[in-house]
Image (cartoon, rainbow, N blue to C red; front, side, top):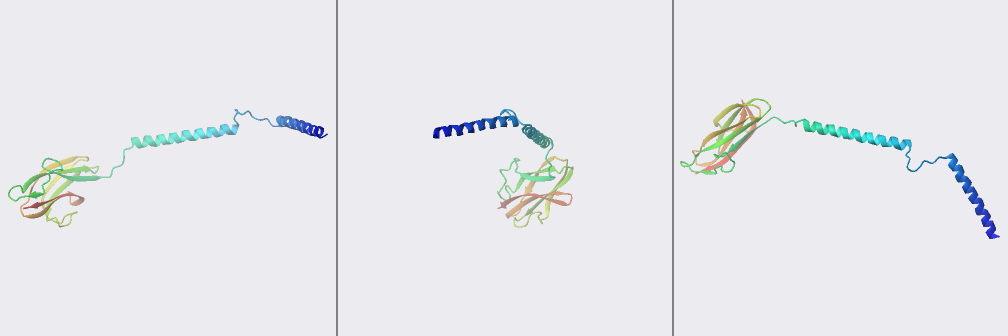
Length: 190
């Protein structure tokens, strides 16, 4: 009896399950697994358009950066070179009457964006005073007008005539305005 009752119950359950499945198939049309819904297609289009817009913006920025030159601040420069136009053999000690007169090269560069008249002042002190600008009286001065991006190199002769420590200071001026650019060379005279 137990077997018959169980068969009857399972049979009814199976019938009901089969009927329920058929009913569900009629009421709800299940999409195929490979088919995409309209909302999925809209989402893919939105993502694709967003990626294309981002790529276009990045490409535009990259082109702008490549084409547009960087803005340069106006500047000028001064530098000192030895008698061979190098930065290697500056005198450190001079002997009065032997090598106390020697040549040096000075270079000035104009990167101001305009033609500028420069004044180079040569000063000398004992190496203990302030620099920027030095309060020492200038020994010599050189003047030249440079176009933008022009370079001026000239040779000058230094003469040390007193024993002791010395500092040769070369300052860059424009008319009566000190530009804040200077170079110096310290040496001892014996």
